Length: 314
Image 1 (tube, rainbow, N blue to C red):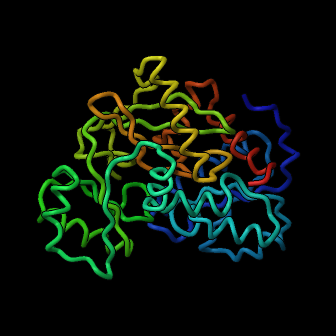
Image 2: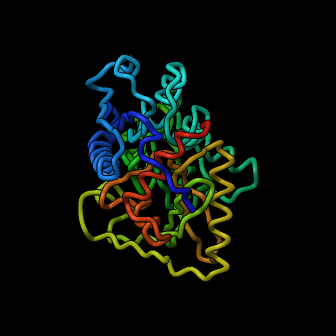
């Protein structure tokens, strides 16, 4: 799938990780793992934390390209992509538009909905005009079980699953600490899947199961109770359907290079798109490396494939 590449063709590579977002800790782990993989393969790669360094250092130190391993705001939302474009430095993954759209869960859902791609019913809570008295009606409209999500955070930060109007009000106020807009989404009671996308191809889907109330931050990064199934157990037809849906969803947001689409499956077998990730985690618990491994790519080969996305226009 991935063309053989020569480590020297990439020149001097800055692996950008850390940053200032709420996902800094995850980014540090991802970045260190990716940096070590590149060094093992002879790439002239160096760590670069934008919280500690000026972006002009990239020019002064003659970096040829950047592998972005920043998660969350400032690194995954188009801001860093735009800055690097202004500096004329190639970078990995999606460009400014794709990054910005995918980071915003509300705009993501609106685009998918307009294109007829299946996604759960939702409402939007805005900090400027939110009324606690509306929570009862929202609960009824969305099926009395609701996921509350800050519009522009990742790694399940600020999220909650609620089953009452009082819980909804509390969860919305908590989510407002992270964002002025909050997505209120009908909870889909069924298995959760994720599909990694690499260079235009959908990798094998992964099904996650967790004893947690939902696939939250702790289930993703902090404990060992989450079970990952890859192959996911879908039939060949359903696997193909999910792959096609994920690629359509990824392309609809102008995403490119690599990323991940998260999906729920309803009781009748139908899929509902949740969100897109343009810089997914690359830790030992991360999903993209698990899917790549089943597809025949070990961690080092996956890292080189991600770096290779910097060779084409994002």
